[in-house]
Length: 215
Image (tube, rainbow, N blue to C red; front, side):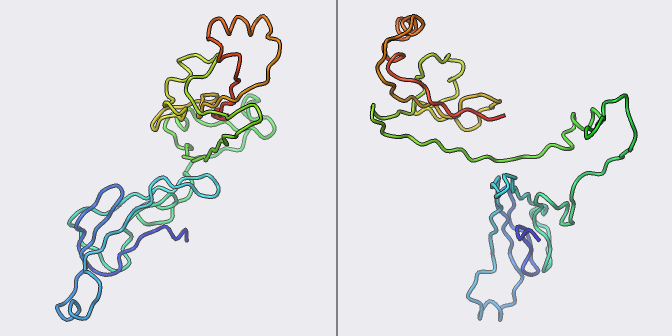
């Protein structure tokens, strides 16, 4: 039991449904209404794209429609391990234990192209990233999208504070947070002199301390 499922608390009618909320009007007699301190209309919020401790995703989806009648115990939504309220783990695949042209040598497996194309084994994972901004002996670090020696294309999805925008598509190595940190004075190399001439003094005074998307 994941304790994420939502069940109807009694008999009633679904008043409203969307991706994040289910509203049910429960049946009550006039006598029950008189003695009850609770409204007969109850709203249930559905958990959307919440990260678990294992980095997997909890995303509840409604399985009832507006106007539908429900009884006590009726499952109102599906989670990551249920289908129409029933336990559903994994995928049904036809498996063969056999050699196949050496591709499944040792611990390797061979899967059908359709499994990849139809995302049968695809799952959603949520990662949490943090980046500290410190006050160093050489000065304060800064979050910015103006990063020396980095192309505009690499920073196009960063806002003015250097944070990647919501909805941006990212791949391995893309910048998630842009940060620059002061660096000590030293005799510049010919390459650094060229960069200073192109990007200005800022390129020589600071170095990037970016947070990038992992593999």
